[in-house]
Image 1 (tube, rainbow, N blue to C red):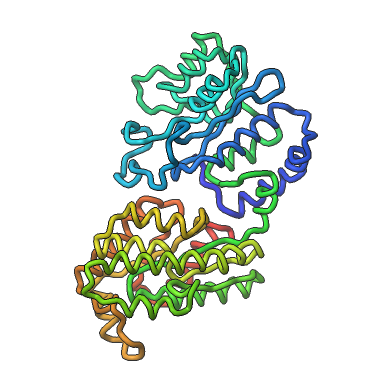
Image 2: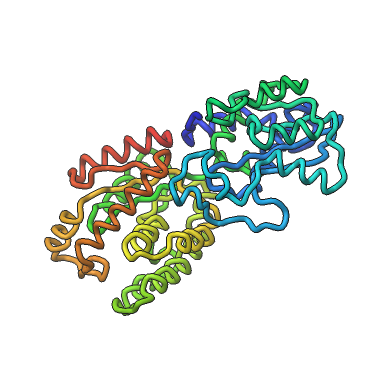
Length: 411
């Protein structure tokens, strides 16, 4: 799947603006385009951290049922994906997932509401899975399927392809190549937008870049250097940091905690969550809506590295707290400055200008676990993470940061 930079997406959105205005005003005459767009809108109800997929099923030119990948009626939305936590590849160990695919959910909704899907048309961006959704569509009497691509969902070479099943059942399968095709392909690649208004508004939303790393890695210096470079290029920039982005006294409260307290990690998490919630609500989200590029010195990735990997706290609990605090806002780019724990301690010892913090006083083993926590997160999401050698000079790192921001975000 192609990975789109923010700049590429904005250009695609700009080209699609006139068509989106038609969709928004309900005057688009091309029903296939209208239905495919509605499938995308439905997909945004999904809470799946890996991918959001939606579909609509129509009779004549009326949508009769919709579905997205998520839990069936009566089951809560999981805040953390068990399969992702365990590092399981896409399509494997599905018994661990409480969710159903979009097509399966749509057909279930139709059955529950007594709506016939016999002779109906299914609109969905991806080919239905060959194991569950394809048989369900055939059994429901659907006669035509429209997708963005006929690429098969499954990866097992011994599986009977969905296309082969549909052909045997006499179902027509068409690829959508209408006027919204370019935009829908880009959106299906991972951009979360809930409506035409959100899509048009997204063209002016500022990028969000997080700088991460262990103690004394040099990220604060690089935040200021990148800010200066971007301002020099004419961009509006906001620099901020955590902890303290929401409540200025957060750092003092954290450092006032008893380091011998057996519930230290949980108390730290509670303070970070409180601060982060306010930080996103009052600072990060408003700044992005104003079109500002937000550069943040630390964020929720540090909580996972320090309290999770460093202190051994349950990663699921941390994930839930972070999800609630960030309100669904994801970073466009995360830059990690990687240094060894030995280098961390050497720099702490060498620094005579600032007071040594409680985190800096932790033993070498703690700093090693924190480092591995950051590297593990970067490995899980290479699309959004950049790992730089923090032992390089400030000048070298500044150039590498600017290069990464240009390549990834087009800035």
